Amino acid sequence: MGGLQTVSAALNVRVGKIQMRNPVMTASGTAGYGPELAQFFDLAELGAFVTKAITLQAREGHEPPRLAETRAGMINAIGLANVGLEVFLAEKLPWLRSRNVPVIVNVAGSTIDEYVEVAGRLDEAEGVAGLELNISCPNVKKGGMEFGRSAEGLREVVSAVRRAARRTTLLVKLSPNVTDIVAMARAAIESGAEGLTLINTLSAMAIDARRRRPVLSNVFGGLSGPAIKPVALRMVYEVYRGAAQAAGVPIVGVGGIQYPTDAVEFLLAGATAVQVGTASFVDPACCPNIVRGIADYLRQNQLSAVTDLVGALEG
Image (cartoon, rainbow, N blue to C red; front, side, top):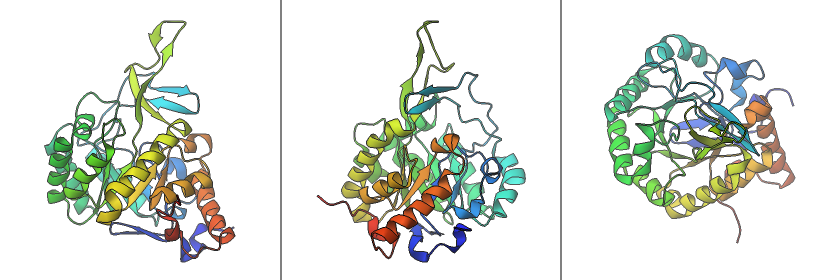
C-alpha cells in the first residue's frame, strides 16, 4: 500500500474534539518530539502523534543507567527528561505543526500550579490538538505519581487544568498502580476529562545478582512492553464497562501493543484508539504496519468501520 493517507475512511475515529484518520498513536516518551520516528515513516500516517512529557522547566532526568531490558518488555526510569516548555514551543512544536498530524502534548508537573501553567500555555499554542495529563508516572519521586494514586488528588489537578485549558481536548493518563482503576476513571471524567489513556507503566525493578545492586540508578522504574498487555486489556475492559461507555468518553488503550491483532483486542475491550510505545524500539515502523493490519482485519471480517469494533467483545 502506498501512503496510508489513502486508506478508507473506515479507519476514522474521533477522540474528544480530535478527528483522526486512524486509531493509532504513538505513546508518550517513546517517540521523542517527532523527528526521531520521521526518518522511518511519514508521521501523517498516524492518527495522532503524542509527544514525550513536557514540564515547565527543562529536566535532565535520572542518572544512567535508566533503562533495563526484561523478559517481554523493558523498565525505564528516565525521570521525565525534556527540553522544557519554552524550548518545546519555540523549537519542537513548529516542526510538528508542519507534519499534517494531530499533535497531543503529554503534560507533567510537580505541583498543580505547574500543570496549570504548562497546560494553559499549550492550550493557546497553534498546532496543539490535545493535552494528555501525565499524573501517573511511576519513576519520579514527586508530582505525577502522587496525583495519580488518589481520586481526590486526581480530581484536583484535572479540574484545575480543565479550567485553564478549554480549547484543546483533555486526556488523562491513568496509573495501573491503584486499587480501583474504575473509581479513578470516574473521578477523571467527573473532573472534565474528554478521554482516558490507560494504562501507564507498572511500577517495577530489576536487580543485578552479580553485583547485588539495583540495575537502575533510581531503583524503581516503569515496566512496559508485551509483559503488561494482559493487565492493560483487563483495565480497559473494566473502565469501558464501569465508567467510560455510559459517559460517552473514549478510551485510548496502551500497553504491550506490537502487532495489529493486539490493537484489535484493545478495541474489542472498549478502546476507541490505541498507542504504541515499546514496540517502536524493536521496529520503528510498526505504527503504520499496525494501521495496515487493522484495515486488513476490517476487510477480512467485512466490517465497514473500525468503530464497529469498539467494545464489541462477546461473552
